[in-house]
Length: 118
Image 1 (cartoon, rainbow, N blue to C red):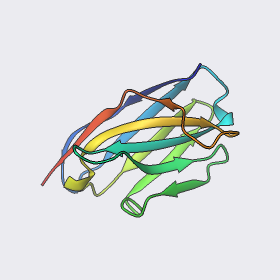
Image 2 (image 1 turned 135 degrees about the vertical axis):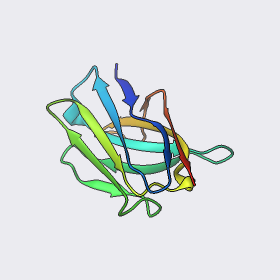
Image 3 (image 1 turned 90 degrees about the horizontal axis):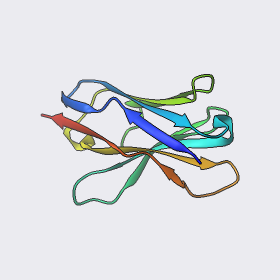
Image 4 (image 1 turned 30 degrees about the vertical axis):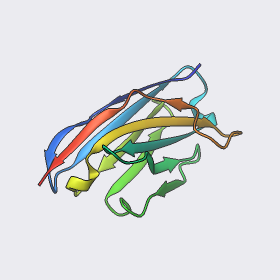
């Protein structure tokens, strides 16, 4: 069983930075693709970024150039560095994991709130 524990959310001003962390527990971390999703009120959940076990990354167009996803395989942790935050980045951010053999993210954290004020 995989457990994910997010931390690092909060309330900031536009232009500020935050770093979200997600601790991975329970299985072999290097066998999992990790991702961050977000869901704003009234909107569907969207993929923000994902990173493979080999640290290849994908970022959505809405965050490209501002957000950076990284992983520390020794610490079983992924980090989402969010710079130049905008009010439209306000959402609940969820860490997620999927085994390299599967296509869907099947493990989810509890979510952490990020609020960006203008």
